[in-house]
Every structure is written in C-alpha cells, then in structure tokens.
Length: 373
Image (cartoon, rainbow, N blue to C red; front, top):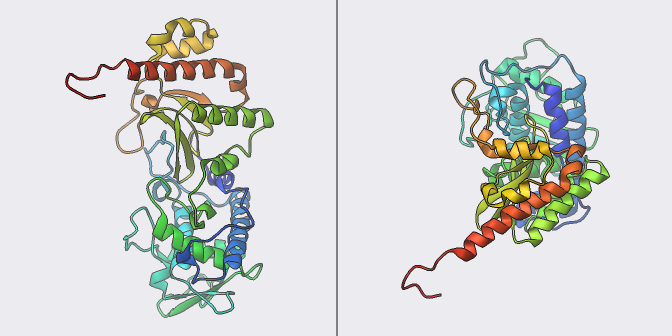
C-alpha cells in the first residue's frame, strides 16, 4: 500500500524530538552565528514550525506526490526524490535558506543572494547542481508562506512570477523571528555533519548534533518510546537495559524517516527496535543459533514456535531494481505493539538463549597451536 503525504507527515512528526532540554552546550562551530541561548531558543522555535508544517501537510488533501511507477517500497528508508518530490523540494529550499542565508544583525531575517542559490535541489549528493523547476519552486514557496514564512523579493501572488531579475530574497518569519536562527544553525549542521547513519538533521530538528558532547543512546530512546502506552514503554526500556547489562552494544542509525536501535554482541547484530514510514514500529530478531536451544523453543507458544521453525530468508523479489527487495533476510519480524506483551517472556528467553549460545561458542573456540593466551 502506497504511503500518502499525510502518512509521511505523521511519521515525520513522531520522529521530531519531544524532549529537547532548555540548556546544553553548543559546539564551537556554531557560536559565531548567535548567542548560545538564542540558538537553543531558535531550535525550539524551529521544532514548533515543523509541528505546524506537518499538521498542514496532514490536513491539506490537495497536496499529493506521485512516486515513480513500479517502485514498491519494502525497505525502511524513504527516498524523497523518488517517493515525495514535493517534500524534497520543500526540504531543499529550507536547507538552502539555512546554509546560504545571511542572518541579519537583529536576527529577524535571512538573505539569500540569487534565485540560483535558493533553487538548488538537495539530495544525499551534497555536490549536486540540479535545480528545482520554476513552477515547482513557486508551488513550494507558496506552501511555505501558508506555514508562516514570508519571501520578500518575489511576488508569489501572480500566476507566473518573473524570476530572471531576482537578485536576492529576504526570508522572514513574523510569528517568531528566532526560528530563523534555529533554521540557520540546523541547515549548517545538515550540510556539515550529516552522515550515512544520520542523514537528516534538519527535518528531524536533531538538536543533538549541535551539542558539544557525545549523544547518549538513552536520550534518543526516550523520544522513540514517547508515543507508546506505558506498558509498551516499559517493555522496550526493559529489553534495552537488560541487553546492555548483558554485554551487548547498542548502535543507533538515524536515516530519513527511520530509526534503528541495533543490538550486537562481538560485532554481530542480533536484534533491533526500528521504526520507519514503510514498516512502522517493529522488533526484529536475527538469531542464527536456534538449533542449539531447540529444547527451549519447544516450550514456547505455538505461534512463536511456528515462526521460528519456518525460519527466515530472502522473500521472493517483487520486480527488479532498487527498492524492491522485501527484506526477508533481515530476520524474524514482529510489530512493536501491545501484542508483544503477551510473549515478552518468550522473547527474552529466546534472546538470552541466543546470547548464551554465542558466548559458549566464543569460550569453546580452540586456541591455534603456538598462540599465546
């Protein structure tokens, strides 16, 4: 089932951090933009802007994107340029404003010199020189004005504005001008600090990338469980804490419209909590040693036993080309909802048994002849 613009906006809104602290130290690379307190206030204001932006996308049924035909998505990542080109244009414009906009002395406007600079189409390729078409730029800018952003230097009220003579555009946000400081800082962070494992700082309002300290996994986890019921929150946090105490490591990957908490032992990923636009909230187990504790599995409820005995492997591919693999090889998949509470004990025993088998294998490895211990 194809996802709508409203689905995308609801997912994005859930990924925006709820628990942004009032005080934290800012990286030195941002301190020449504004005072630290103003940066923190700007980030909070930009988050509120994003909330309103998402709400408007959810409410406006006239907005729609048509993904490229034949590209059914089964992976967790969302490719904006293919699936939601309108949103990609919006993101590009905001990023161009943030990265290239010159903040006024009073911090109440951002000046972008030239239409060419404002209309760069952004993607994972930071060196892209592709431009957004004029009609799509006008459509996107008009939507942003509905969200409260004003563009001085172009008349968006006329049907076909003449952009050939535009030398500069001044951007303001009358509702709360400090938002522009947040946009500026996050735009720079997106361009300078984004990576394959954290490739959308701007649209998720990832304030953690501005902090002059390492990001704590628990901080991200706190936002991850926020939409859940209390029992489901307790379930997730219990598993998270238990397996860290058991010697596993948790690595967090923040893709666009997806988050993964990947738990591994000795460099081998065993299970994860995930959320994404295409697959929702899930718990995925990639256990490979189930044959070594079959006696334990025999005591599980029939539904769990059948799932394990069936095993996992690559599902039959649907078509050809990028994005069509159904990811059957990723492991045993469970929807992360209240239904897991009924089998929480079995899931814990299952993972404990898998970990024990791996630890036993490690201890049982023979030392090669001539090697000192």
